[in-house]
Amino acid sequence: MRRIASGVLLSVLSLVWLSVPVAAQGVKIGYVDLQLALTESSAGKKAQQAFSAEMNRMETQLQERKKKVETLKDDLEKKAQLLRSEERTELARQYRVEIREFQRLHEDSKKELEIRDRELTGRILVELRHIIHDMGQQGDFTLILEGNNTVVLYGAQTIDLTQAVIAAYNKRGTKIAQLIR
Image 1 (cartoon, rainbow, N blue to C red):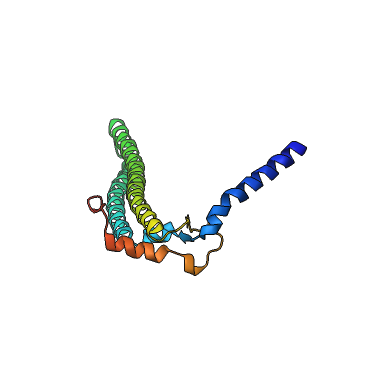
Image 2 (image 1 turned 90 degrees about the horizontal axis):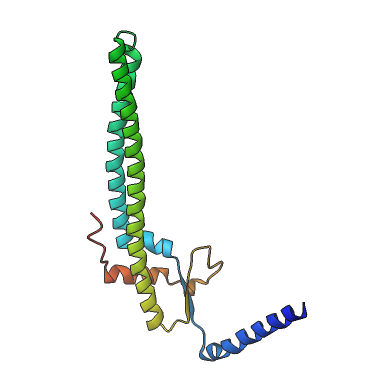
């Protein structure tokens, strides 16, 4: 127990000793809400519009496929008694194939949208981090934190750099235009 207490004391003293030069120079801290910057930046809004358009296109495809499946199901239910055994078996097989195709299309669409979202979001975040890095160096910041509620529990509005980051990003422009169709 004594060793642990002396280890903790030594750690605290070393942290204090290391922080003396930083305190002498003055500490400048800021924070940025990356999620807000992502959704409010021009590139983020364009990416969201492109993503929504792609999602609507896929939803239309899924609805068409679903109608086809429902039509086959109705045919199977209504005509089953009137059809010969081979015809009924073939119609049931077609129905199973269409259901599997619908399920595959649904899963593929979902995965494709997730990949597209990660790709667009990732690229924008990389660009935002470059902006934040440049702002940190130019503004002589000691530390810039991510300001969503999971990292910064409280931060004065005066050190919130989110709107400045969004403005700088919008002014600089984005290199992801080719990804946004």
